[in-house]
Length: 410
Image 1 (cartoon, rainbow, N blue to C red):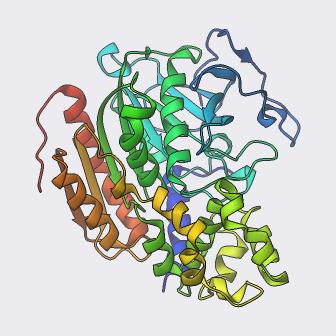
Image 2: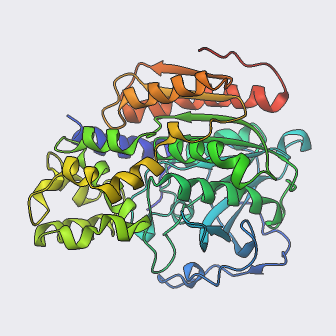
């Protein structure tokens, strides 16, 4: 199935709201293995090799035929690269790098690293697969960035390779995946960026969390990157607050995804499978196999975690357990270092998925830390907030990239 990005985004929006009340020619070979695109339905490209080399090492690439209409000529490449888990263990992550082939070097030498929003946990949901299929809603902001002449890197995050399990909104894991693809981008065939190129971060919803976490951890985890600016929206900065707000409501799906993701990242703490009753196991199996808009999303509307556990315990009881509370504290973004570069933040004023209050608290924390930042509230709910954020994101990041002043508001 092939759809233009705007059509797909509208389709995703319809599903969420209903529950809420020709690529360029192949480039030259790189030192990493360049793999021809397979014809079979099963795709061995995503069978992970050993996680060798330092974080950001390119392990495998192949050209990607991504249908983006109305943009400058570009080259797209699917990439496997070395990254790390929440505890620093090496792992392999997938992603896509887009390189404009005719853009002036002044802009093509800047890398926009886009952290994608919620895709679903099934392996087929990985953005790199959906870009090729023409079903990836993040194609719209990618096209906008390419039109500005930026190179663009989009991680799949961890867990989308064969045998993997995505950790979803787990902060450090998202940050590592985002930052390590920024490191890897210059080694991709035909790249117009270098190891010292300016780097920008952007993301909305889960992607807002991924980009914000990357901005927070960049100085410690990837000080070699020349980070210049950040634009984020709909940031799930406090997973406890977000999860409690979703439980039992029309968007319970997203809270359940978050718990499944935490379990993938911290299995010894969460121990989800042993808590689930038969119905719960069936629901989680559905979550782990589907993309956003799948039947499980609709089926879980209005349900609570307590509907799926053997003892009827819900989100509040689960998140109060000491081991899980420690995990949540580790994933509370406001308690981590503030960004050191200009950071724009948006949030939908009527957001029914990611609680507004915890995003405002994050903004206040960043202001107190002296970050050049602003928070704009948009007249929107969660999905249309993402659409409305594209223009201010572009204005903020283009100004930062050009060395122009930006207007902070604390």
